Figure 1: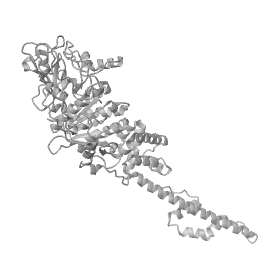
Figure 2 (figure 1 turned 180 degrees about the horizontal axis):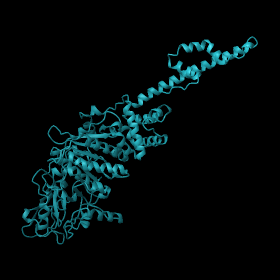
Figure 3 (figure 1 turned 135 degrees about the horizontal axis):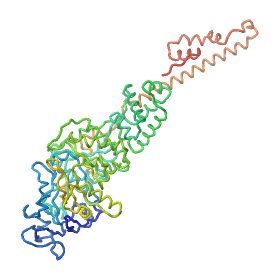
Figure 4 (figure 1 turned 90 degrees about the vertical axis):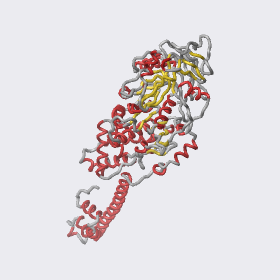
Length: 608
């Protein structure tokens, strides 16, 4: 989303509703805001020094003895002892003894407290999470911040980039007053850094290394869910796969599947499938129509070879940092079914291949699905059940999943219940539906000293309400947080550099060129062509036989008077006595001779 489209609200970060005027979004609004915010410290004085604090009567900054001290670019607390008691209790909940990601600094009663750091244990990243908030509140930058730190800690990351604005993670960020101000406020030692990336695209649609999968690897159950088939149709599709496997008909792309379905409902194929339960013409028609509609969404390019090996997502860069795999989906964001299909297959493939590992000190891989509402919008019940089961079970294989969307209501309740880490950016309450969504969101958080319903509407850009799982797996206290600034480029990676990165990847030569080897479509087409030629030859010989019969009848009519005594001679005897018939009889070793002789003698023609 474009954070510059939003105007930061007023931050109410404590029980009393103390506020911080936000910053109007502009050309630089993607960067974190608030360097010049007014701050009110609760229970401790504050001294203004520099741009970080304005001293003004009634503006929210009170000078007092020895509490929080304002520095250039932000507010610094002198020590943990200076924290108000509620803030101290919240900060204690985020104390981590092992490796952790730094999210930002605690907001309490309008003050940003950099000595109260909000962190998430690295070992808890496989307990999944949700990053939510209205358009323009900084969700994508939060995703980028977390992905950067995971990569730095050696954890591979997968990003589904719907809008194309996450690709900048590959390039160092641009320093500026806003970034410097935010870093000072939250106690961050900011340094511009880029991170190792691979860029992918579904079937080569858009910039990136093409990702493809075969129909066979999807299997009938998963494909039935994608095509939204009912139980009877799913069972019929299972028969089609069974037949293809038994006959060595590889289902590599959608035209292979369509060819097998068409063959099995043809006069030639019905007899073969009848032995394993049969397939009605009506059911086959539904399946074919579903495949056609699926292709129209662009899935035809996705299915085929070479098939992507999902183990490529688990790699590290030579320097030990985790590789960030960015799936560029801007070109297919209007094809949600295609996007959903890929995610289902990718997760299912990883789940199938990865061993059980239990709880690790750090995850093997963390997924981020930006614009997750596209994943669930219009999804079938079977799809939702599949996602729920995958999210529940893939944790034990060392994989964490984070959904990024606008409101928690975009995520089905069964999936939301599995997400242990929450980063909730501001919500808007402009309509009755918005207000209802706000109240629903508040109910999903643990009890806290914050007035959450008010706070969530006043958070500024780059601020969020956070609760995660601590090192013991228990929820942490709710913490209003001013988030750190990403160190990489907060915007799209330049197109020329992205293209160079794609073509310079060692994976490009392996996956760039589609391969269409002989499979079910080619084999069935070859058989049908041979059958067509045989039918044409049969028709030609049948015409020859009929011509011979007509000739015999003509000769018999010319000699009728001389053969009056032999009127009982049958036409069949005449044909049998002819030279044509003797020639055909001598060629009974050929298929054509057998077919014709059986036809003349009234026997059934053998079908192939």
